[in-house]
Every structure is written in structure tokens, then in C-alpha cells.
Length: 256
Image (cartoon, rainbow, N blue to C red):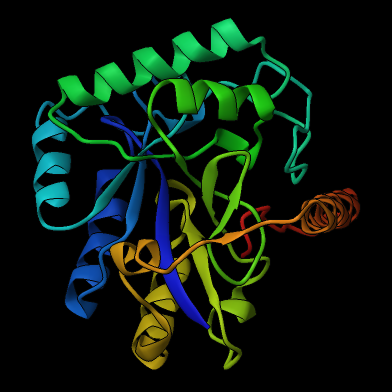
């Protein structure tokens, strides 16, 4: 499996120390990830440090170095209990919200990132949840790429190109054919998590690619049957995680 990296929850007030440690690991390995930047974060769980004034400059420099920027929601607040068309979670900032409001959220979010000097070319939904109105609003704002879904290569659905994420960590370092994405939330990574990530990259470097390489893989048209299969897989993962959580077992919805 050839695996790209995506980093969620990139904000001016994130844990810059942890972000810097993961950034150093990726740079040492020559891997350029996708980073999801939140334009107007109001999520208290993402407020780790005082906002860094140099944040726009830092992200702009990373983008010029080949890192790919995605619009990661709007406020990063979950206001809906809708699961949407990728039901891996039962909370969302976008799924269930009317089209006009989603259009404004996406339009204003893109404007903020561009004001910071960034060039967002992809959408990253908070909580991995979105609906058909999200796709419609994205296309109306000239964004036709989205990081999410399950599969072994990029696919086209409803006029959008999806770049799938991994269902579990072992999939990312397997010998099977295909492409996927490993999801990182640096704010919540422990020292052990970062050390394990560094070991994984060193031991399985040949499995990992930069995100622009992932984007160069030709996308295939997704059939209705495959859409239904993906929905059922995502919902099954949701039920599995919910069951384990009820038993006190910690497991993430992002493939870790």
C-alpha cells in the first residue's frame, strides 16, 4: 500500500511543539503531507496555545515547499447529529445543514485562508462527515477534491474527486496494492504516539508518499453499488467504535 499523510486541526492556537516534532519527522523522510487548516476555529478543544502571529507565514512557507492545504471546515464546531453520506461519526459541522448556509461557510472559509496567503485546493470535513449539499456547495466554490471515503485509489463521485483514508493503521503498511491516507491529529498525540509514528516512517518508508503524488493517481468513476458498500463499511466502523467506547476501550475514528 502506498500511503499519504494528512494532518488535521491546523490552527494558530494549536500545539505548535507537537506539530513541529511531527513536521521534523516528515521533513527528514522527505514526505510532504496534506494539512487541514481551520479558518475560524471556535473549538475549545483545539485551543492549546496563545495564537501564533507567524502562523500564516509558517503555513505559506510549508505550502511553497510542497505541502498541500485543505479547508478544514469553518468553526470546527459540531452542530448537527447527522451522519451524512460517510457515516463514520454521528456528529457534523456540515451534514444536515441547509445548502445556502454551507455555501457561505465554505466561501468565507476559503476567503480567510486566501487572505492568509494560502491556496486551498481540497476540503477536509471535521469529523469526516458531510452530505450532498456539502458537495454541491464545494463545487459552487470551485473546490472539486475531498479527503475522505474508503477505497484503494482516488475515485469520482457526484462530480468530486475523493482521496480515501485508511480504515486502520495496519492497512497503511501492508504489502497489498493500492493507495490510502494516514490521518494524524498532532494536538492529541502523546510522546509515545510521536515516537511510534517516527519508527513507523523509518521502518516502512517505502510505503509512504507525498500527498501530491497521491493526487497524481488517476481517479476512477465510483458506481452506485460501491457507494452503498462504502456507506455500510463506514457505518459498521461507527458501530464498532461506539461499542468499544462503551466498554472503555479507546479507539479513534481516523484509522488509528
